[in-house]
Length: 590
Image (cartoon, rainbow, N blue to C red):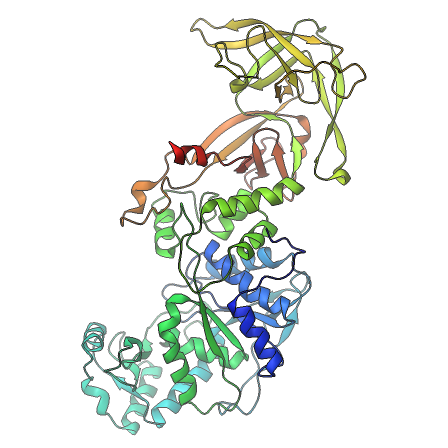
């Protein structure tokens, strides 16, 4: 397992970066993370974030956060804000590297279209800085990108096409030339300027590259570079009614920002020849960026498609983008996973050229490893049953010592109240237990964690035959840590003092889907886990009334938990982050 202090990982992309620095091809590494703000980031993006920002960190380079915002009908400020928050949260623990950011409200410096003036970052900020910042936007470069398109027209490498989108797709599929491919340069320049001026309706015209309609690579078959969209843009407003396509804007944004290594997922491998063609066809004197591809993350028991995640949200199958069952970074954060755990996971799975399915247990292992080291131990009972210690007086009260984290001596200890009446877990008592049941049973003994050994003397039931109370006796000479605590019993259970406990809403989250590949048969919703959320009212030790959203807690013998944003002083709310052990392993063996 890779930790925060472990050596940097090694993979084929990092090997390329190291070789480029050693050969002198680049003296400074510059990467970027360029999400489209059309949804919330998910755990697959976390892999890309950790790769791009990680390379910048490890090689003393810089990484830009850039919004690839070329489609105004699908992009919103809400998504921009969520992306910024997610990236800051995930990389915030890395204080020793530089983040390419522009000061809030600033615009990029003007660039010469002929490329004579180099690009400089407006600012380089540490993510821990208190200075407000905002990311770069592809839309910051719309003026430059437009001029680059004009340059292609003047070179005879682009033309305005009047075919419908459906006709364009059909002709490209068949390898047929558009009837408008023969238009002259001056006519194309005039039509493109009038497209920009808003003379034509949506879908009536496009600007296409003139490459090779018979190319075996369909992406080189005269791809569309610009389309008409009379729509307000979240960042540029109504300034534009034509918008560059992703493939056109992406490589040029990389060039303008001085990106050295443009790292994408494998589905963009077939786009790389177009990426190179666009850059090489223009008069760009500076060194061109190069695209490298790696396998995207496919995680078992989840779906990664933004469209399908949006479907879950819109159909209210989850409570929102930050539902703790969602694979979104905001959902993972709300569930209580720490950025350190997510970074360790992203490092541990590695970077390869081959697609595969990552077992979710790898993620769960990283989460448990992190939380075990840092989570504060607390006592809580999720399904309480009352225990009365009959040989103690009603007014009995004492405080017992309990460690905050056995893995971290510096975490210290706390006092927990102990009285005559307690709550224990319902599952920690069985009236007719199976063999090797070492918890409480009639006539049986068990140790209360941090406290005493008790013996069940009597079982009290209601009229329906349900157990409602256990009457027990306590061995006063068996206090944990005491000089006379010599007697041993096989079972130890947790508990809380009934008189001093607080109530809390506890949300028991589980995997959202019941099968490792929920989308394998095309109907992912039929595999939704009906038991992915259970809400209980728990009895908790009183210190949890002051639980902090910045900390994580292990409810001893149960699971790891985090304070939810719905929590209030009068009604604490905790989310189960993960169980102490992999409970699904047993299910898979059945």
